[in-house]
Structures are given as C-alpha cells and as structure tokens.
Amino acid sequence: MSSTTIAADAVDHEGFPADKSKTGGWVPAALILGIEICERLSTMGIAVNLVTYLGGTMHLPSAVSANTVTDFMGTSFLLCLLGGFLADSFLGRYKTIAIFSTIQAMGTGMLAITTKVPQLRPPPCAAHANCQTANGLQMGMLYLALYLIALGTGGLKSSVSGFGSDQFDERDEKEKSQMAYFFNRFFLFISIGTLTAVTVLVYLEDNVSRSLAYGICSLSMFIAIFIFFSGTRRYRYKKTVRSPIVQISQVIAAAIRKRRMNVPYDINMLYETNHEASRIQHTDQFRFLDKAAIVAEDDFSEKKVAASPNPWNLCTVTRVEEVKMMARLLPIWATTIIFWTTYAQMITFSVDQASTMERSIGNFQIPAGSVTVFFVAAILITLAVYDRLIMPFWKKWKGKPGFTSLQRIAIGLVLSTIGMAAAALVEMKRLSVAKSAGRTTATLPISVFLLIPQFFLVGSGEAFIYTGQLDFFITQSPKGMKTMSTGLFLTTLSLGFFFSSMLVSIVKGATRSHRGEGWLADKINYGRLDLFYALLAVLGVINFVVYSICAVWYKPKKPNPAVEMGNVANGAGAEEKC
Image (cartoon, rainbow, N blue to C red; front, side):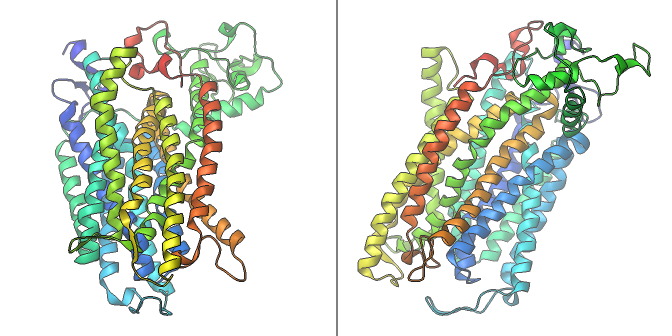
C-alpha cells in the first residue's frame, strides 16, 4: 500500500496500518452513530418523563423529584470522565463503547422490570390526598436501575464522538472536510433520538405501559450493539497511550520540584526530544509549568546522557504544552456549566408546569413529558438553518465555514439567558391563572403552548453550545487526551445538573417561611417558580460577562511551522478567537 492510502496514526482490527479504501469513512461512522441514537432514546426517554413518575407514582414532592432527575443526569455525565480515562489509557474507544453500552442496556431492562412489579411502587391514591411515599426498598431498586444506566451512559458517551471522528483522516483534505460536518451530524443524530424519546416513548409511558417503553429502549440498545459489532472490520482504531492523568501529574510534580529555579530567557534551552514535526510550540501562558522542562544537573546523573530522564523530574516542552492546552480549556469549561443548569429546568420544572396546563388538541391530550418536543424541534430547526443557510453565507462573506466554536458557545449562552427571562414571564402568568381558578385545580385554563418560547430559546441555545463545546474540546486538546477532553466537556453537563440540584435545595431552604412553602413549593401552584427562573436569568447574565473575558484571554494552540497548515489537527488554530 502506498502512503497516500494509509490513514495517519490509525490501524485496522488486526493491528496493521489502516487502508483508507477498506476502513473508515461515513459508513463505519454511521454504525457508531447508531449507538448514540439508542443511548439518547433511552436516557432522554427516561429523564424527560421521570419527574412525573416520581411525583405521580412514587409520590415524591416536586423539588425532590426534580433533584432526583438532575442527580441522575449529573452522575451520567460525570462518569464520562471515567469512560474517557479508561478509553485513553487501557481499553481503547471500541472496547469502552462495547462494554458500557451493554451495561446501559442491562440497566434499562432492569428499570423496565422495576416499573412493572407492583410491589416496587407505593399504592395509588387520589390527587391532592395524603399519599404514601415510596419506601426504602422501592426507591433503592429504582436507584439501582437508574445508576446502572448512568454508569453505562457515562462510560460510552465520552468515546462515541471520538471514535466516530477516528474514522476520518485529518491529514487528508477530503476526509478532514467530512469530519468538520461529522460533529453537526453527530448532534443531529442525538436530536433524532431525543425527538423519538419525547414523542413516541413518552406517549407509551403515559398511555400504554411505562415498562413496555423502557423494554423497547433496552431492546433497541442491544440491536444497536449488534450493528456496532458488525462494523468491526471496517473501523479505524487509534492505539492507547499512557494515562493522561499520569502525564499531567508528572508535569505538575516536576514543576513543583523545580519551583525555585528560573526559566531561561532562551526557550530553546528547555528540554525537548520530540521530532520537529510532532512538537508543540512553546506558549507564554502558565509559565510556572515551564519549570518542568528545565534541565537540572542531576537529571541525567544516574544515567547515560543519551538515556531518557525520569519523567517525574524532567518533561519535554511538548509534554508541558499538552498540559497547558488542557489548562487553557478550564476557564471556558467553567463558564459553560450554567447553561446546563438552565437546561435542567426544561426536563424538570418546565414539565411540572406543563402537567398543570391545558394540553388538549381536539380529543388528544399531549403528555406532559412530550412538551419537550418543542425543545427538540428548536434544536433541529436551528441545526438545519445553520447548516444550510448560515454556514454557506458565512463562508462567502468571511471565508470561514461558519462561526468559531467560541462564538457558537457565546450564542448559546445568550439564548439560554433570554429563555429563562421568558420562562419567568410565562410562569407569572400561569400563577395568576392558578390564583384566580383555584390552586387545587388539576388543569388550569391556560394553554401549554405558552411554554414554547422558553423551550425554543433554550433549545436553539443547546444547538449552538453543544456543537461549539464538542468542536472546541476535541480540536483544542492534545491528540492523546481527546477522549479525556470529551469527558471534560461532558462534565459541564454533569456539574450543571448538580448545580441545579444544589441551587434548588438552597433556594427551597432560604425562601421557606412559617406561613408559606417558599419559591419551590411541594405543589407547584403554591410556589414562586417565576422568581427562581428570574434568578437563573440573572446568573446567566453574570456568567456571560465572565465567559466573554475568558474567551478573549484564551489562546488557541499554535500550528507547528515545520508542517503545513493542512496537517494541523482540524485546522482550528488561528480561528478560535471569539
């Protein structure tokens, strides 16, 4: 095989250099995306309607139900770090996806059984009665199933996008352009899975059988796993490297050991052994870490000069710069967490709002969990408009294929903040209707379609911020840390959900009084959810100001002058300014 037919840094299933004509491309990538569709189908089919099950069947208070959902989702995404670590260091992305997708399918099957057995839920009771809440055994079985699903979701999710992008050679101009579209297609497939979940699955849960719906999720995942295995011979694989956590620890440890030494004025005096083409150019940020590359007298004292020094004492400039690259991601990482706190309200309190509103279209009543279809529709419409209108227009006008990743993140933050402001106004209207019609009224005379603005704004925001974050964290991270970097991105979702739980608990405790239940009452009609939404809008404004400062401060990785610009990963270098 000639060098032009060999994919860079990739091997086939037998460990030989990957032949482009026989491996990779859109067909294997599509098989991988099938896993992602089914993961979304299961996770969102459970999450968007879980709050109604916890309140209506398990008889938990509104705030407790919301926190249970956000804790479940938060744990799912937090475990992405574990999946990323295992994929980068030991298992590889293929095995990680195979193992954890099986765990997720088993967890969903267990949830189907848990919701089917009558002994695993409290007895039914009339609305507004003093209902018996679920006991410890019932909640324990439910939590076991949910967190088995969370483990599976977290383990596979950090590897799916990375393994999909592995199917394209970034040194091949044609395949590199295909990979640029892969991230949008990836999110499109996520949205298709979510759309099916909030329509078909939620309808089955509310009107046919919840256990049947969860059983379908489990079966679909097993089918997707079988299809995934069918592409084993067509995939391109990247070899695992040393643990990114160990590499980061070595640089920090070496820098601390040499903290009293001064960095030389001539950076060429710093230690470097990598070939010119694989080096990462030195940057001026985080100068303290440069101390790890200072050559001390005793670094080679116990070995021959030609031997490699102890990496806990001396690191190359390239290794130091890889750690700097990860450190530079952190401010952007931290300032995107608030978006996912806003997102959490769309699948918890907004669904709770919908359950009290008029949802009928003729003789058909929309399930409360299905109102999130407006959210998914906004995502799909935004992606289509961006893909077909904005990207071509921007390329003609600016010569660039769409907004940079930092610009997309900024747009998402702005839209979500406006969405929370709109949500506060709608809730004020809903509460005024509840006050006049009676707070115990099961269905208030106010249309559920008033919730569309908040779903549409936050949904459009997610279309921008998710693709922006995914692009940013993959293209701006070192090659050997891409799965870990994807896991880092997904922890913003995790921390957003956890922050939502914490904020709910703080607000509930701080606003509760002897004469009332505070902003977040056990029954939504007795609270002031509008003020909670307004608080999130204010936090969103503050966060956007901080994000803007971080985006201006951020310096993208430099292209290596020794190689052509076309060979730099994703070609994202100098275009990443906000």
